[in-house]
Every structure is written in structure tokens, then in C-alpha cells.
Length: 171
Ligand code: NI
Image (cartoon, rainbow, N blue to C red; front, side):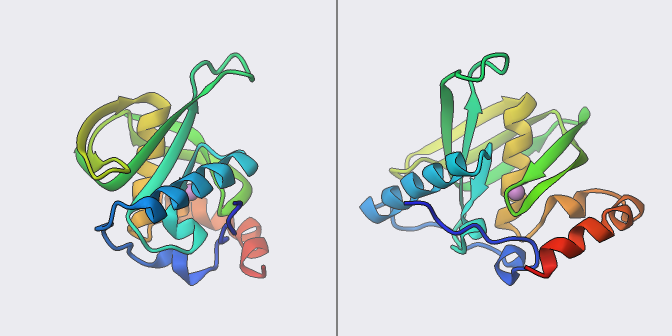
């Protein structure tokens, strides 16, 4: 089922998500719907608050090979994630967000992170991630805390996006 994606200006995007406690079929159905929604809108990541659900959960789907547009997608599900390590080394890369359709701009983030999380059955995991996956993990974990990628750029750069942002707020 394709879920509604809330756009910038929606209050739900600014709220803090609650931990997931029940790892049941209902949760797994919701995760399936989130994956379908992400594919529908061509995203690389989708956090539960973006579909109006204030739960600490996000999905990520990264092509195994970027050069090949038919490349299979490697799926990840992160529940109750905590980033326990951010590398000092950073990268600045263009980022988008399904809550801001067609708005891409460079964001500086750590190149590597370590994240503790649970899977869809509640099993605890730890992952070291780098490159694009590390970026998605940081972007989506921010969503769970009501933080958006426009908060991660300087006020000056943000003011340059002002007119583009107005477009979303009227929706
Ligand atoms: Ni986003």
C-alpha cells in the first residue's frame, strides 16, 4: 500500500518519534508499505514520521551498483536507531528528501558512522556504514528527532532557498 508522504510545513515532521516496542506482524506490514512508498517516489530512504507515524523507524534502499539503473536494491530496516560514532572526516554531497520534492542541495555530514538498531523482529544489531548508506542513516535518524536537512546548512544558504521552500508550505 502506498502511504501519504507529508511535505515540508507539516507539523508531524518536527516532532520526536517514540521508540518501537511491539515487533509484530502489524509492524512488518507497515515496513512493507514504507518500502513500496519509497520505491513509488524514487527515494533512497524513508522515515516513519514522513508518513505521519511517530515511531523510531526508517527504511533505506541502496542500489548495489550505481552505474546500472536495473541494479537490485539492497534493503535496510533500522528500528530504534542510535548513532554511536560519527567520523571526524566529512563529505559534502547533494541531498534530497521525499518531504521536499525536487529540492537538492549540498549537505556536509560524517563520512562514516556506527549505528545500533533493532531489526523488524526486535533483534539488536550494530553496523559500521560509510559512503551513501552512512549519509542516508544520518538523514533519516534526523527525521526521527524532528530535524530536517535544511537545518544542516548555514542560515545564509538556507535563506537562499527561501523562495523554493515557500512552495512547499502552501501545500
Ligand atoms: Ni528526508
